[in-house]
Image (cartoon, rainbow, N blue to C red; front, side):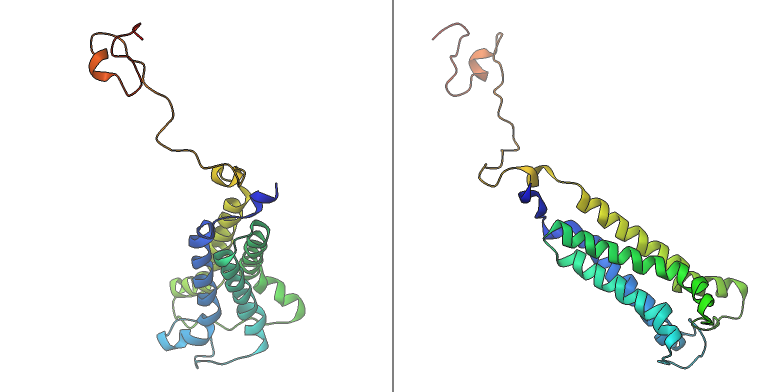
Length: 191
């Protein structure tokens, strides 16, 4: 069973890259968003406070670290740990804002947009929607690492089987002479 703990590094490549990119987006949006008039107040760039640390930087760091672990790990248990770290980071993006009000954290800031549609877009792209997408790709990585592939289940000393097949065609009928393979008699029944 120990041979099944190793996985190809390409197994979590897609999910790992997306987790890293989404985590970077979530961590940088409150700081660099005012450059594009998209983000959260104050509208000055690179303003740091503990609310942003708790609600944006920490879950983004968890998602990025989890994505890097998923991306570069060749061990099933370590990669699953990275995927769980990504799930926790994404879940905190979703529920962190409402839960933070319990300890008097007002939030990252008010959305910079002026209309209701813009407010919704900023909230979804910075917190709830972003966290849901991060949880989805981390769960996708968890599922991929939970399954043992056929190539991984082979014992290390057993050679990999040829994919072309090992059976030989049966040769009967009037075309038997033309279809006879090497080592097969040209006429059925003849030695």
